[in-house]
Length: 140
Ligand SMILES: CC(C)(COP(=O)(O)OP(=O)(O)OC[C@H]1O[C@@H](n2cnc3c(N)ncnc32)[C@H](O)[C@@H]1OP(=O)(O)O)[C@@H](O)C(=O)NCCC(=O)NCCS
View (tube, rainbow, N blue to C red):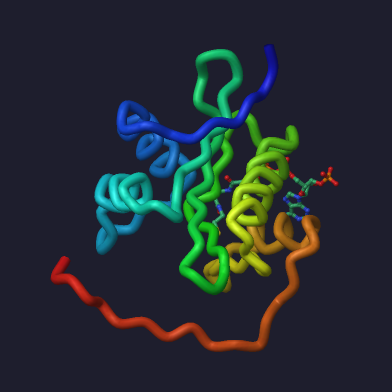
């Protein structure tokens, strides 16, 4: 059947978090299950999944904040990398944002994630000379 993209449902939570863990995307200070639930509970965000038959092989979280589109939790299963899954997921995320009228897509990458930076550069993403600031709004 090949690779297909679909929006996640609540039933996909454990498999998706497992994929994020296998891809090294989780951090002790973030609750990935809460992140997944909030994305699905918010009208202008979602988690898109890549399936190959019944196997989950990739994910991307995408959302519109009212001004720009943002991407998080892009992951391809370790044994399926280099086969176009990440490109397909990013294309689906871009289409999803275009449908909502978002003029731009942005994302944050850790500075030392050379693999992801190379991947995004291959897809036409450019470094922006901005500094990202943050502040916690909920106790962790
Ligand atoms: C980043 C990641 C999602 C890429 O997924 P992937 O399925 O292997 O990527 P694709 O096979 O779709 O690659 C798409 C293109 O990027 C290129 N590419 C991928 N990694 C690259 C790199 N490090 N440097 C240069 N080009 C790269 C591929 O050659 C391919 O080019 P082509 O379409 O012209 O042939 C995957 O490596 C991953 O899950 N990494 C761990 C999680 C992570 O760091 N996520 C990003 C968090 S910000």
